[in-house]
Length: 322
Ligand code: GDD
Image (cartoon, rainbow, N blue to C red; front, top):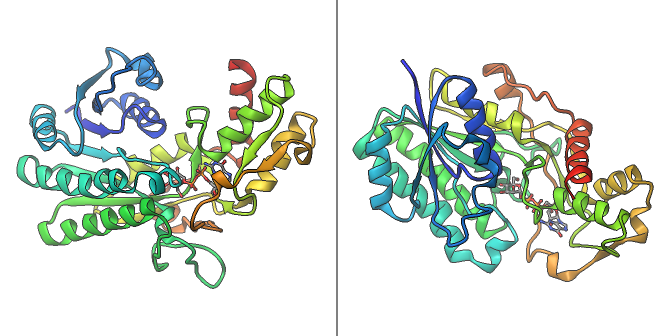
């Protein structure tokens, strides 16, 4: 029988790759789109999927829309990827961030409990939940204590905990994927990787004079979104609900990322990168490096992209498209 999947946040980087992956696996795919007065760019990532997926307007904060969508789609699997996903922006709009990223998950879980208690739920949890906490070897694991350092991270920790609570209390099949940073050509350009690559290409072409960034010394564990959405599906198709870290286990500083990209374009980043306080966060998460051994062993997941091939794909995209 054809399986039905509902994706919240289907218009985003991960939502669009996940929709493609599930269609390839033979799923019937439903998606929730937030109403926006300018629709033109909003659905650009899923433009090619038109006619193949079922889209409905809705919002995690509009409980009546969630009720309707669950009743209409009667999903086997629900992927909750909807969120205010930018960490620095969460300081500018903390209440909206907490409402969407935390209260939105309460709304979804309550609606699932009422309308489709047998549906499996994937929650997009984040390595931002760890804050500056790590094990003695510097890595983060499923067992590492979580001490978030942003409104975004705090809200994600609330939802992560609620998923575990509803799993135990109401026997829902509810799982967390604790995903470390993951990038692609579809990444919005206010995240650091695509911001650096896009601006470096523009500088190379003489269209920009310099690149303004915040903290150059933080380090991130960057993978490719396409690999990470495959993990989401494996997590929900495991025999029992559980929580899994998805990461590459390798980390790079923002400075090294700049060095690499500018040198690929035959430039020296020191000549073009300036620090602007505006992009420095009130509290910074300095170092992320995830140990995904549990997912690799239990789910058989492993990334196909390397850091190099991920970077090259994004660079090629901007060289062609700009
Ligand atoms: N965005 C941005 N813009 N980040 C900058 C800049 C800048 O101009 N300059 C330095 N950075 C630094 C940030 O301070 C941070 O340490 C790092 O670059 C990465 O920033 P982002 O690319 O914005 O990602 P993030 O780590 O804050 O959050 C992403 O990863 C999380 C998983 O850990 C997002 O995708 C979150 O939604 C996700 O949960």
